Amino acid sequence: MINLKFKKSYVSISGDYYQIKFDDEPDEPIDVDQVMDSLGPYFLIQFNFEFPGSDYYIESDDEALIGHYVVNSVILGHRTFTIKYGIDDRFIVKIEFGATDEEQNDLINVSKEMFLNVQVKG
Image 1 (tube, rainbow, N blue to C red):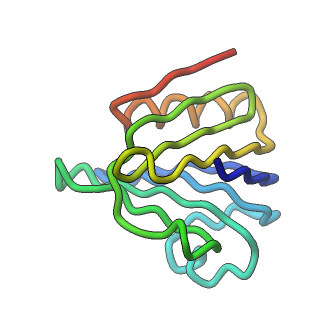
Image 2 (cartoon, rainbow, N blue to C red):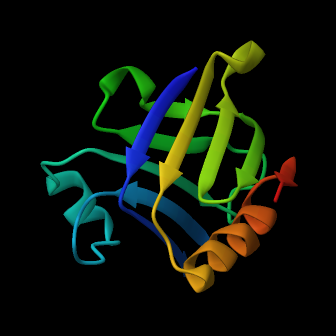
């Protein structure tokens, strides 16, 4: 299991395009160009419902975690987000993050829409 810690979590919905991002940036850079230019650590999950059956795109400052994958499950706890993805849960990433109650609820709601297997604990 890979453990990551971030100060912020963000969710974005633009039509059929959903995105969840964790980072340490003080502002809310949610557009893709800003993410690509980011120098700090981050973890990003994107999905486009316009193409059902397609994989999720996962990006991180850790190049070993980047790619198009099937997401097997997501577990949301109190300010934690655990994602299992890849064949046979090749990657298990647990993210601790800072968030207001509203940001936590937004993350839970978007996760329930984005992923097939979501557990909410605590």
